[in-house]
Amino acid sequence: MMHSTRNCRNGLFYGGFVAASLSIVACGGGSGASHSKMSETQKALPPANPQAVTKMVQGVVAARDPNGRERAIALLREALSIDENLWEARYDLGIVLASAGDLAEAEKELRTAGKIAPDAADVVIALAEVQRRRGEPKDAADTLGDYIESHPNATDAKAQYVSVLRSSGQIDKAMAQAHELLVKKPGDASALAELALCHLAKGEKDTAQLLAKQALDSNPKSAIAERATGLILLANGDDALAFQAFSKATQEDPTDTTARLNMGSVLLRAGAYPKAEEQFRAILQLDPENVDADVGLAAALRGEGTMTDASGRPNPDMANKLEESRKLLEAVIARDGHNISALYNLGVLDADFLKKPDDAKKLFKKFLADAPSDHPSRPDAEKYLTNIDSSASSSPAPAATAAPPPKAAPPPKGKK
Image (cartoon, rainbow, N blue to C red; front, side, top):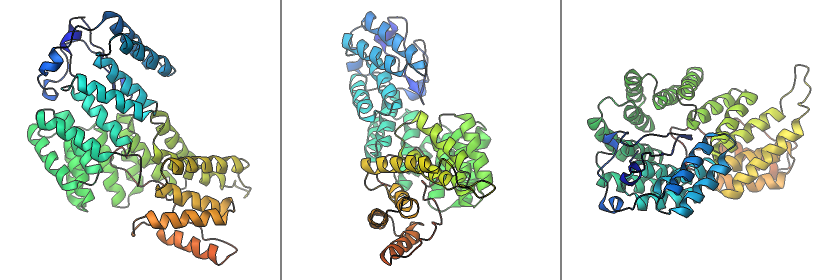
C-alpha cells in the first residue's frame, strides 16, 4: 500500500481492506515493486488532522467487528468531515461500502481518493474491482490500463489488469499483459494461473493444464491456481476432482467467492441442493450484491422445494422454498432485465411449480431473445414455449438448472 508522507508524520498509517479484511501497517512498509514515486500534488498535501486520524483509526477497529459495519461507516465519514483530504479514510470507506453492497457510493469514494492520491496502487485496484462488480469491465480495464501506463512497475495493478481483460473477453490482450508480468515476476503463480485461464478460454486445454501445474508448483497455496485447476478439470468433465480444487481454493482464501460459485454450480449439477445453498449463502455474506450467487441460491432453493423423503413425501417447507426462490429471481430481473440465468430459472419456476404459464411464456421469450445461440438451455426453453402454446398438460423437466456457469474471476454484475 502507498504510504502517505503526511500521515507518517503522525507516526501511524492505517490501511484499508484487502478482500474484505482490514490490514493496519506502520509507515515505511509495503512492497516497493508495487508503488511508484509519489506525485508533487500528493506531496503537497498538508499534514493530516489528528482528530480525523483518530476517527479513522476508530473506524478501522469498528470494521473488524462483524457487527460494526454501520459504526465504521459513520466514523469514517466523520473523519472525512474533519479532513476531506484524508484519502486513506476515503479508501477505507470505499472498501467498507463495497463490502456492504453499496457499490455506487464505494466507487464515488474511491474515485475521490484516487484524485487526492493518484499514485496509490491499492486505491486503483479497489476502484477497478468495484467497477467490475458493477458490470463495468471496460471501465475497470481503462482504470487499470491508465494507471500501469504511468506506473510500469506496479505489478499488483498489472496482475489485476490481466484478470479484468480476460474476464471481459479481451483474451489476446490479457495474454500479452500476462507475459509482460512474467518477465517482471518470473514464475509468479497468479500470472501463470491467469495465462492458463486465457489458454482455456481459447480451447487450448493441454497448455492450460501445464500452466496451471506450473502455477501450483510455484505456489502450492495459490487460490487462483487451484481455481484454474478446477476449471480445467471441469472442462475435462471431472466434476469430483474439480470440486476438490475449488474447495482447496476456498481453504487458501476464504473470501474467494468465485471458487465458491464454482463449488455451488458443481453441487447443483449433482443435485446436492442443501449443500449448494450453503455455498451460495456464504458468498452473499461476503458479497451481498453478487447476482450469480442470487441466481444460484434460487436454483438450489427450487431444487430443495421439490425434494422428497425416503417414503416419497414432498418437502413440507416446499412453499417457502419456492417463494424465496421466486423473490430472489424477481429481484435480479428488476435490477437487470437481461439476466438470462434469472429469466430462464424464473420461467421454469412459473411453468412447472407456480403454474403461471402466461408469465413463463414471457420469460422464455425474453430468454431466447437475449441468450446466445449456443446456450445449453435454449432447447429446453423452446420446448417449454411449444408446450405452453399447445396447452400441453405437462412440461418437460429442464435438463439443467441454468445456474450461473463456472467462473474464472469474480463476475461483473449485469448482462450475461
